[in-house]
Length: 376
Image 1 (cartoon, rainbow, N blue to C red):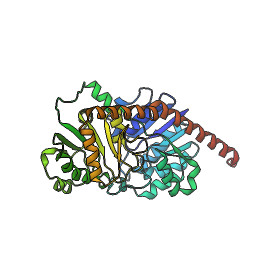
Image 2: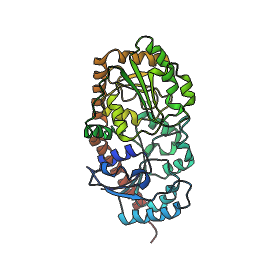
Image 3: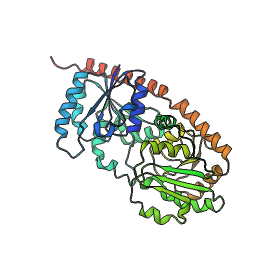
Image 4: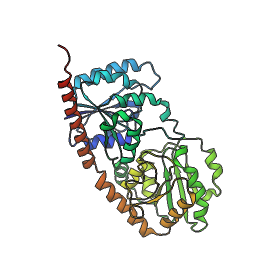
């Protein structure tokens, strides 16, 4: 089967997904050159990579780009065209030209989260239009499927669950560079990723004085860009317990941060799924997550991670203390989380599930064409 993947963004996920699928299908990977040119080396050599001059949303050059994309897709004649994210504007205008192929769209967020300004650059009606015109819709868990079925009531029978891949690319970078945890007895608590209101960073900061009163040998690393950091800075009572890297984090630095981390915290007040959690599992790190979206669904509380209520700094402090004071428990939970991710979200399993969805899509498309043939 020939699958053409359209990857407008979300580099880590799209690369891992394409690599997983390449073992089971003939894959063409179409993506913006400005986002993916530095990532080509991480793609499986069996993948047909087509990097394009993909304009930004507001550029009138999108008209030319659409003609080029449609011509490319028609020349390749795939069985499936899979939009790897729903956050597109101009690609909606290409959908009529793709109707002869099976159309699949992955939804990463059924609704935008509080403070997620980047995603809101794409008005939701464009994502909704793409979803409405897709043969199959993919979400990354049962809770998200319930949300999607509630929002897209006419598409209930078309919404499929595909596990979110374990993200191993940074593990490969760490191994290539022979990274080791720095020789430092301090317990490193890592908050990583985009800094938006829904991530609950304020909850983490408020929890730390409760931790350090009992366990002062701790360092909280906050790494990522996003909101203005000044309001968070004001919440920090004792800067000596914090290391702030409020910027875009390069790949090598990301790999070192996860290598050094003892605990990875995701104190989100809202969520869909999380690439940060997928990276933490790949590194076998102990995790603390809130019970929102899909975060707690794949974790056995107390065994493969600790689950707390969102917005509860006391519960978060207790969870951090539990792991900070017990290195053996940290290692056990990290190993269990990694094993669970490999069992439920390995590249092999995800590729198998994806192929089943694609085969169902192609069969449905053929049946539809037979039932409603074009006029002669």
